[in-house]
Image (tube, rainbow, N blue to C red; front, side):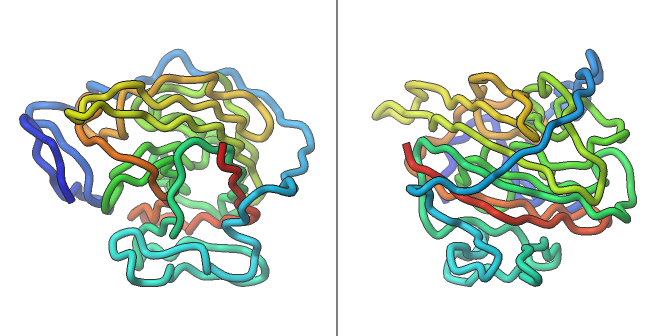
Length: 259
Ligand code: MG
């Protein structure tokens, strides 16, 4: 893995966050915001049925489209039962075999009804819109229980983690299925690896617009300021096995349309 870093170190962050960037002298609090708190919106009923030209990434039967993110030669090891995919935290993140540039993606996720923990340690997973390396390297759309669960607003469900707060809080109760519909425009890079056009994302959370063509500052940065430090092309989509001790998140009905 090539990292174009000057002032950066790559480190293993405690708490199972996995491999990510960390900046010297930076503090967590520098990039965690608590106000304003997004207004609560109760979602309506939705159908997430795949259109005719979608690539089905998970159809409830198997993980044939997925591999372990930290060793792409290994088939994805998470649990599939009763049409549902559930994170296996012991195994690590999984990502798609196929790589994508710009796309429309649909994904359904569920926080367990018996969820425990609080803040970032309560049903934490994530959809990495482009996986650009092992661990948590990539651009994370946060998955978390955000129904009556306080945390920094740019770390709640519907946030681009540590970059931007969702416009609204459209979270459903633990135990209910929730949807993400994502329109992703991948970043482009110049020949010298500097960013040419930043990534952009629009996100519907349970049918409610929570990110409106947001321009990303770079890949997710756990500590410190994000920036485009690594040129990349088409990339897999990745799901996070977060190392917290709360009950694991489940998924169903995942499809993608290349644009
Ligand atoms: Mg996460």
